[in-house]
Image (cartoon, rainbow, N blue to C red; front, side):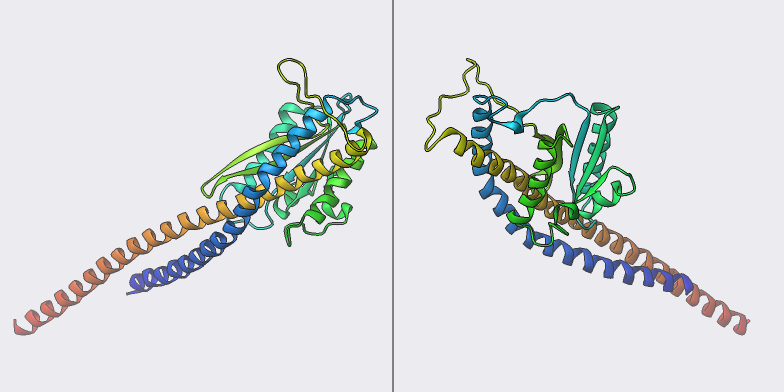
Length: 289
């Protein structure tokens, strides 16, 4: 009977776990809808603005666009975007692995610093001396209430670090949202801005109004802040997609385990009843004999 009690306790435990994972799946599904709508609506604007920025950068010299300055690569900043919580499959681990890969393969021998946006990636790199918390830019927790204002404060701090030559190159590592079941890990160069040159070598002929410098001074910083905010939005939607998928699989696995345990419990119970009947019949035969 002790074995039956143990199995019964496990069935209860698995059932409780299944209720939790099912609830988390529904919560993530609700949050995913809002996050997905936000990134889908933002992408066309952000991508077109980035295209204009890159084409415009090709028409400017260094004195007109300091954000495109190519320097000898000594100091690198890798920005890792993760979630604050776990239980979302390989979502956070993929970001950490990609950051480590960049250090080992692309930036070996360089002075690499890390900026953690999200608790999980911050925890992974906090112990090293080259870690920069978002609090240095006046932001405590950007994902508590994701907004352009807080994202732009971080981007502004990074851009100022590039202009002051604290960083020679800045890379963002994040999960790009494809759909609820799929996220693609990306590492994109944030700074310096990489000009886009068309096949004919002409990046476009622009008429500037009111003036070229006024537009450049306003457009480039704004575009960079929007690109950074888009990466955070992408990651935010990817997080909820990954968590919903992970909790769906966990719920299915818990359900399968519960059925398996129930079958084992019924078999053990049937065996126990059979043994009791055999003992009773054996005892009766002994009395009759």
